[in-house]
Image 1 (tube, rainbow, N blue to C red):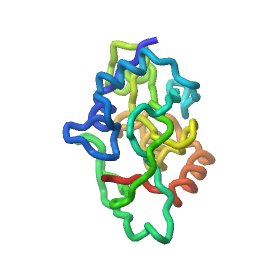
Image 2: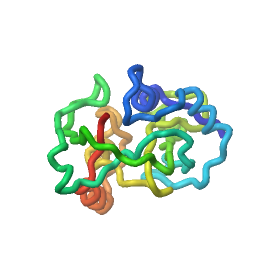
Image 3: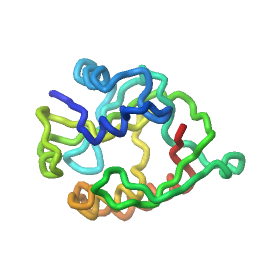
Image 4: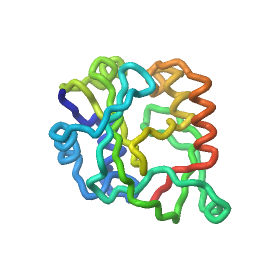
Length: 185
């Protein structure tokens, strides 16, 4: 099985200007190489048949991506309308500034199969392409951000995957993200 970083993931996980909330202490090429050489601790089924997550112990200093919202840090939350790419419409996002999350115990690359990536206009020369990565304390997936679920349901032309909305999964995700937020450093 071969794995490559998609251009979308490469830009978000390994930006030109390094950010503290992206993968640390590892180049994009070294990350890709490690995913191809090291077997995951386990493989999790994703939200659709074309998606899976590989669970790896974190070999970097990358910090957890989700931070619990508390009365002590609520004042550090920010929000804005942002688009992930120039082609996508901006959506409301929120994040912390000024928090110091713990170093994640696990990295969970999110993989899409070659056929799905071709359908989305991102053909790859591998079996699987990395579209994102979760940084977690437990070797389990955290819920997808609700707006990503909605974008996926809107279809490929809006930056999604075309997977219909699962209302129960959406409610679970909303409950998680109501009390957690991403952070920026």
